[in-house]
Image (cartoon, rainbow, N blue to C red; front, side):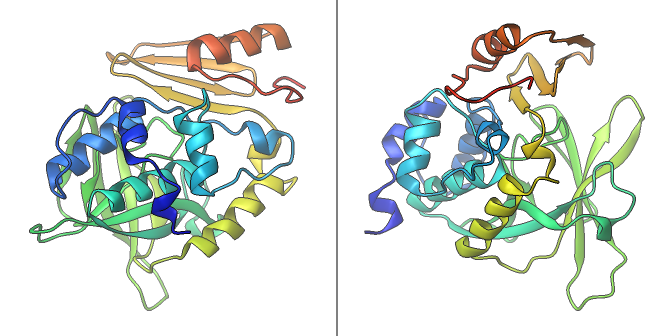
Amino acid sequence: MHDTERFDLDAYLERIGWEGGRRADLATLRGVHLAHALSLPFENLEPLSGTAPSLDPADLMAKLVRGRRGGYCYEHNTLLRLALEGLGLTVSGLAGRVVLGAQSVESRPRTHMMLRVTVPGEPQSYLADVGFGAGGALLEPVPLATGEEHDGAGRRHRFVLLPHDGPLELWALQAYDRDARDWVSQYAFTLEPFAPSDFEVFNWHVATNPRSPFTRRPYLQRTTPERHLALDGAALVETRADGTVSERELTDEAQARRVVEEEFGIVVPEGITLLG
């Protein structure tokens, strides 16, 4: 059975609230990308119990589309890839090193999944990514080209080329930090395509390695037009659209579960402890 036979495009588009066109064009790519980013939360609840979430299309449909759940980069971007291919776009997987907060590019392994999308009639391909759990994440796809700045739904991004020793150019996605008034690299990558089987290995490693941050504490994100909400361990941080930031500490398990359900729209499965 092909992946597209286990993926329901109509149900997916209804879940993200997309009522626009379904042509294989740039407007559809931008609209679906933004709708997904503002509808489906980022979460790592399975890795908290040492379990790798399934990337099977039917399981992604059950969890993110028909269930009150979110996921992390492999789930989100696999789901988006299925949707974009169903809409007639050409998509390949990319793998990046998350350099946000890192001492060097080489200190982080390639564990982040992104998508390269080719749009008919467009001279450049686009980077799409609805699975980066950070305030500097893309809300809209951006063309893979250096020397330009892009404002997508209020967030500014650009690409730069980094020094490298390998045969392929090393790209970095940068986001503009309004507080620091500077550009901050989010992740670095080459344009080498990665297969779904590669991401299965990355997914297992990130979800089960006891040294992975995703196996040690809850990490949830939800973005709406009004705010960005993040839960990192017990710290709940809300960033409003005007840049105002508020933070509070969650004190017990019952409060944490209530916040995750009410603020993030996620039902916490039985057997998963948030504030262990």
